[in-house]
Amino acid sequence: MGMFNSRYECKVDAKGRLALPAKIKAAIPDSNGNELILRQGDDGCLALYTQVEFKKLLHQVNSLSDRDPVQRLIKRSFFESMTEVELDNAGRFLIPKTFMTWAGIDKDAIIIGVGGFVEIWSPEKYRQNIVADQAELSKLMDKYLS
Image (cartoon, rainbow, N blue to C red; front, side, top):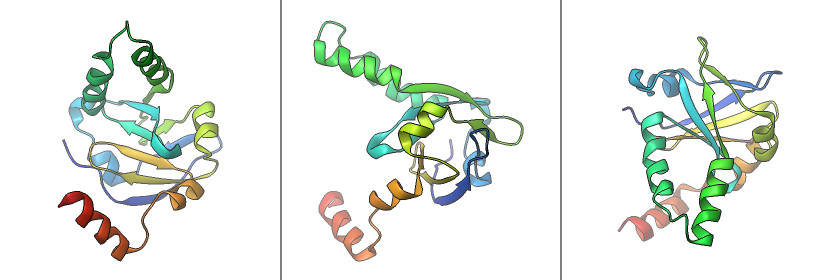
């Protein structure tokens, strides 16, 4: 599977459809088909997964205990915060209205490839959740990757 990377500024049409950038669409393996998984992600973004990447996450969530109340809460919340979406022939998918409202996305969206999945942001939330200063990013990388 290809790796998702880079930043793209995109438009959401009046029907709530978002067209994936060509490089993002090209990184989706042919074996995936047209179905992707969209979930309410971390820090207020939406997270878009291929079937293979989502199954990795799903395996972890399904391994949680149904007997433990905190783990049940995690499972319940996880499954209610996701939906299947389908790419059309133009590489677009429909973002459900409740997901758009939750993420604060209106007409503009920022797509970020983050390795195994894609984040979809409102421009405002994105600006609050990025390290814009490269010197600061270098310091953080030294701290967490050394």
